[in-house]
Amino acid sequence: MAENKTTITARPTTRDELQALAKPNESLDAVISRLITHFKSTQTRNRLAWETRIAKDRKDPTAVAWAERQADLLAARLAQRRAAQG
Image (cartoon, rainbow, N blue to C red):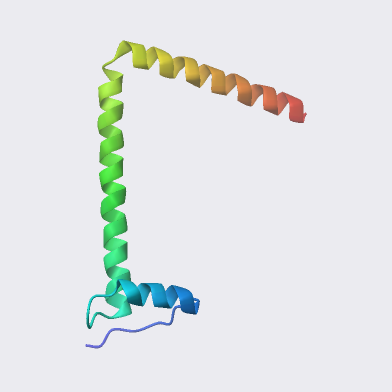
């Protein structure tokens, strides 16, 4: 069964850059799929690293206290801006 195809509008420079990323005999569709897979993998890796850092910091009372102070400062700034806007 043949898959439906669609057209994506891109500038010639973008098309050329995608083609430059292609392996020999690799279609632009395959390049885009590879880029999407890489992006999702990187996004997951960054999220896991962030969650690891947060878990570590939550065990550190100094980091928790600092974060609470920063949150209070940001809340105060937001209140000031809203008050200044009327």
